[in-house]
Amino acid sequence: MEEFSKRRAALANQLQNNSVSILFSAQLQIRNGDAEYPFRQQSDFYYLSGFPEPEAVLVLSKDDKGDLLFILFNRTHDLEAEVWTGKRVGQEGACKEYNADESHDIQQIDNIMPQILANKAIIYQVMGRCTEQDQKIQIWLETAKKRLATKQRSELNKIVSAPDTIIDLAPIIHEMRLFKSIEEINNMRKAAEISAQAHLKLMQQCKPGLFEYQLEAIFNAHCLDQGCRGLAYNSIVAGGNNSCTLHYTSNDQKLMVGDLVLVDAGGEYNNYAADITRTYPINGKFTQEQKQIYNLVLQAQLAGIEQVRPGNLWDSVQNIMLEIIVKGLVELDIMRGKVKDLIHEQAYKQFYMHSSGHWLGMDVHDVGRYKTQGNWRPFEPGMVLTVEPGIYISKYNSKVDPKWHGIGVRIEDDILVTNDGHEVLSASAPKKVAEIESARN
Ligand code: GLY
Ligand code: MN
Ligand code: MN
Image 1 (cartoon, rainbow, N blue to C red):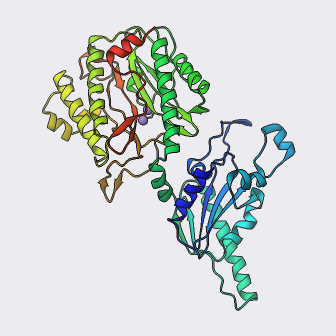
Image 2 (cartoon, rainbow, N blue to C red):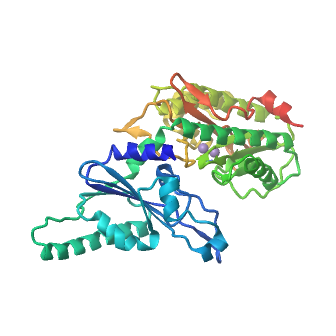
Image 3 (cartoon, rainbow, N blue to C red):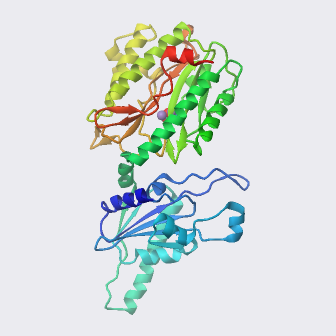
């Protein structure tokens, strides 16, 4: 819990005195009837509290001397409810186990929050995430103002005021989340390692006749068996031409001899994501055409990963990968023209239509800006990103020789920026042609 206290203190250093910061937990979501989706804590809320329950609000109150009070509103003990849904942390637990200075029953929040806001100058909140939450804060502010007006009339000598400034808290927390601590890196290493081993298992067990969801089942089982409590996002298990649909998730088709399968899947460990893609032949052996496209994507990915080191700009990864992919597609006679022109005109977008990757952390597409003051930002130690080039040649692309049809390849790894370069967190999932072909049992 010390890690969470440190984060609150680091955040508080960036907040103005005389302010109140408000952050809501995630809410339980109904799947159907009275059945709920598995609960996953809101990432910003978890980052600052480690608190695992829904129906909670975190408040950081900073006084005019700069002293910080951590107040948690959370569910109170309810023995009857706890028989059904398990033990709650309660108010004492919030203080003892989660280092809250004060904890109140969430049912009391509408009464207590206006008191907390009174005589403060600034509210920090995450703006525009949820209308209901934005409205709640407005109502607390309104109530605070009304109460203060009454007080002003009855105690004429007292100068009282309510906050008159609202500042978005998200960019401040998100800049912090972009730089991973040792503890966070350890969680990400674990998520990546478990997921990489799961990918290896799929490669070994893949065979024609299986349904895509059967590979998905092996992936899920391995991740959960190794301590992930869930997956970081909906797995993509795409055989044959399905691999050309970037976010294919129906995963309900049969895997056919002679096709490739693209598996984009990652486990979530202690709320930290892995995001890994491997593509391989369903019957264990690449065809000539599959191998040519595969090796082109691999060459691009390896060159892209090489760009990841402190000081290099975010777009250096995509720039080098585009050069390689477009040059390769011209050499294979899949594209025609000058490499420079094809890049300038973005003609490659019919085969490679996404960016080089994204930040990775508690969210699979993690928070943090890619540009500062209009310029691509340089890599810095502690950032984690994916590098994930692809080439997708749909069977519906009539401009291309049919021998390439249905070949969709993406290779995706999770990369930590280190002091002197990078570390590939997902390195143990094979990706060289020879390694993949020999992985099959
Ligand atoms: N799994 C989604 C992505 O690769 O961005
Ligand atoms: Mn990704
Ligand atoms: Mn992915």
